[in-house]
Amino acid sequence: MDVVLINVSVSNIEQFDVNSGGSSSSSSSSSSSSSSSSSNSSSNSTSSRSSSSSRSSCSKIVVVVVAAVVVVVVVVVVAVVVAVVVAVEAVVVVVVVVEVVVVVVEVVVVVVVVVVVMVVVAAQM
Image (cartoon, rainbow, N blue to C red; front, side, top):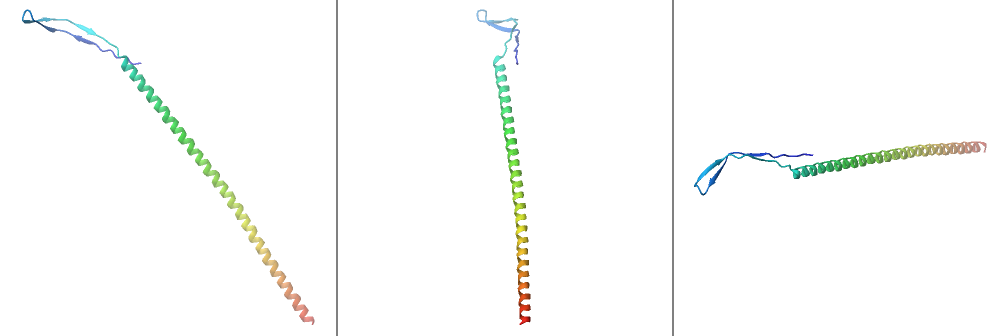
């Protein structure tokens, strides 16, 4: 709470006397003091506005940080899922390649057996 005191002192006021046509000097001294409550209320409202704006900026910062953390977590989860899917597909591709090689070997073995059987049969005739 801010209280502002204003002190005013006035001395040696010269008064003009209309009847005598001259000026008479009188030394009077007065003082007045007043407290400024309007200054106090404006100071309070300014401080409440600044604390309110600092609270709103803090809440904005918290919202931005939480949003950034959520985005990072989502990106990491998506990256892990994609990596797992790619690994599974790579395993599937390897299995398919192995199966193709096995089929080719089986075909070659069957062809060789057929050729040998034909040669043996032709030799016996």
